[in-house]
Structures are given as C-alpha cells and as structure tokens.
Length: 84
Image 1 (cartoon, rainbow, N blue to C red):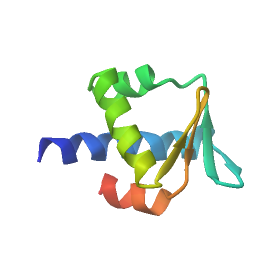
Image 2: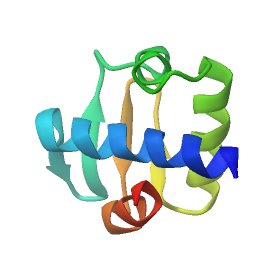
Image 3: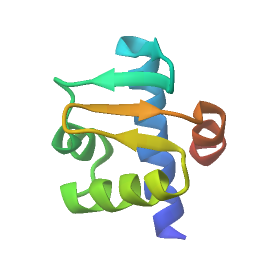
Image 4: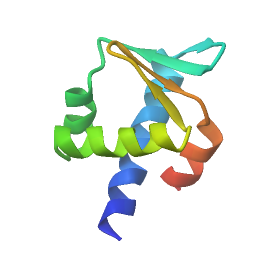
C-alpha cells in the first residue's frame, strides 16, 4: 500500500511539472531538465533510488520515456489515475 502512495506522489509531481514547464512533443509531454530525478525525490519526500525504480517500472509499462535530460509523459491520463 505504501508503494501506491509513493507512486501517487511521484505521478502528481510529474503532472504538475508537465503543466508548469512541459512542452508538447510527438511522444507526449516532455519535461526537460533542469528538473532531475533527485529534484523529484526531494519534492516527493522519497529517495532517488525509489524515484528511479518507479520511473523504470512506468517506462516498462509505456507510461513514460526516459532520457538523460528529459522525461516524456506518454500517458498523462494514466498518470492522473495513479495520482488519484
């Protein structure tokens, strides 16, 4: 149950970042650096490792695409469901 809470917080932060600084791209909504996974960890109150693990799981499910300097939200509606 705790993982779901963590996933909801990370999803909420990503959606807020997408709304504030995201830009549309062919794959979805791109959130480019200067926002890092460490920043996301600090915003959500979890460890960098936890953020990386959740993002990797979401990448496998096709929700996000990860790059060195960006996160692309491919399925914002599914992230919104996770965020609650």
